[in-house]
Amino acid sequence: MSSPPRHVVVLFGSKGSASPGSSLAAETSRLRSLLQEHPRVTVITRGLERDFAGADHLDLAADAPSAVDRALVAVGAGRLHARLRSFPLGRLLNSLGPLDEGRVLWRAARRNGAVRAALKDADVVIAVDAAAVKTAWLARRRGWTPEAYYDHRAASFGLSFGVDGSTVAPTS
Amino acid sequence: MSEPSPAAAAGDRPHVLYVAWGFPPSRGAGMYRALATANAFAAEGWEVTVLTATRDTFERLTGSDPAAEAAVDPAVRVERIPFDPDRGEEDLARWSRSRVLSPLLWNYLRWLRSSAAFPEGGYGHWRAPLIKAAERIHADRPVDLVVGSANPNVDFTPGEHLHRTHGVPYVMDYRDGWSLDVYTGERAVSRRSRAGRIESRMLESAVEAWFVNEPIRAWHAREHPELEGRLHVVSNGWDPKFLRLRPRERLGSDDGLTFAYLGTIYGPMPLREALEGWRLARSRSELIARSRLVFRGRLGHFAEPDAHAAALLEQYHDDGVAYLGPVSKTEVASVYDEVDALLLIVSRSPFVTSGKVFEYAATGLPIAAVHHPETAATSVLDGRPGWFPVADLTAEQVAEAIQRTGEHAATMTGAELEAARAWAAPLARDEQLLPRIRALRALVGGAR
Image 1 (cartoon, chains in turn brown, yellow):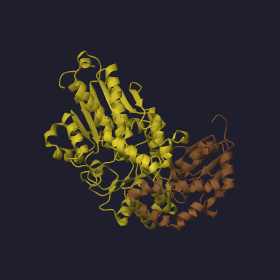
Image 2 (cartoon, one colour; image 1 turned 120 degrees about the vertical axis):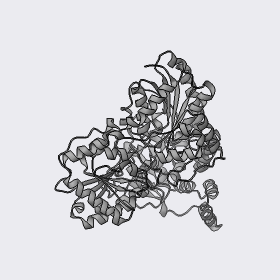
Image 3 (cartoon, each protein chain N blue to C red; image 1 turned 90 degrees about the horizontal axis):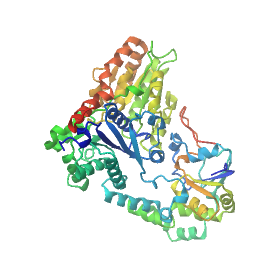
Image 4 (cartoon, rainbow over the protein chains, first blue to last red; image 1 turned 60 degrees about the horizontal axis):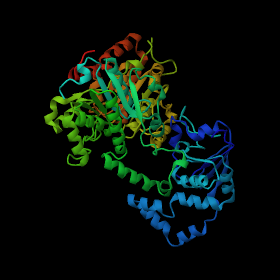
């Protein structure tokens, strides 16, 4: 990126996979580097309860499910997904199916006008977990944003630690 | 193989190709042995070429320690070749549609392809680039000896290749084990498996194999009795280059003592037992209650830190426990200069020495040895002044060791500190490496 980013969108695809320990990495995360330029920050999550001080937080958890998601629930796909999750081959099959977290996030993101607008306005989109990758990748692929990155070291964004002197998460 | 190489016979400096994935700026624990080995060969007059991975590899995968790279002897030539550029790629513009479709499936298929090249899923694909690079290096300047440093075990493949194609002798620096699980003492791979057969074939042709301690060497000698004379212990050691400590008149202050653990903080080590013992010691000792315990090191072996270890440390925050992040090897001396006593927390295994035990010994600081007595680290510290081992890993025993360590530190004189440092002089890294390097010099022939 030649000029400093004006708007950074941070995507959390999973409710529970973001590892707080990531903030203790010695390597600087890409997000942390970008924050040095003080861009506007929008965080998109699916119900992650964190204090994203100084950032706009768009929470997709409150949105009504799409027709596809309602249909999947109606046919019991959730129960099958949960059963498959308990063994390796099942997890592999789940990763190709409609209830894969990456696909769920993408369906929710494209239905939400504010999220779509944020992605289209972003100079950089950061996917902080594997479930956020598809949405970030498609946003770049469709020309909504010029740059998209997978940055697992940013997974602790919005967290701080009680451990004295630890490398705390970026909060602004 | 016993014939002097052309280069050595001509009186040139012998040329060693040292293959080590985890070379600086890698932040892995094994990096220090790799760094010291390359430097020791150079100091002994060898021409040294190191074959390793590109710098970005470590930034992506293990974390990097750029300061350690400055410690590489300028005479050492470092050849870096890419290692799996896709792994850890952050730029999603470089992710293929199939990778996005299912990262899990994409990774599994890569693992299968990699294992087909060499039975080491995460590293097997590196075999072909390594061999190609070794061929090029040998063509440019004939290699007299190859030393491969595991893990990964794929580092052994250039040595075997140059031996098979050009008759170059090679050394396998195992450090720990390929077939041996050093934590359980069990076989990790069967002798009849593909990996087991490849290992046996490589060992048969190797001029030497090195191990970090006698229990691991003895295990391999039992498994391969025909190789007895070629299996050697080259233990780890402390690095004088990184450990220039200041003299101290006394330890601690009126505010209490600073205990420290320096090293990687990872799964099998008895971290909870150590922390419980610390908490108990604080409840019993006014001195320990005024003291603090700091942890410096990586949380786990990968770039993404171990969240469980972080959470565990956080639980003891109110007991004066602090995690202060990783520290470069180039800065450890300044950390040791600021602490008054050490906690040596090591996994239970007769095969585990740990690299940090040597450094701990050399600091002269009192050590509470929070590990089972059968751990190989015991044999290194046995007899060292200011060493307080535990009989078992109960909170009671750990607390007692910590209290005795603290009391010793609080009354220790500068002269006692220097005496403890002098005790560890024979444990310096070069003392372990030089006998083997000199023996290999005789093997390849030539004069300096």
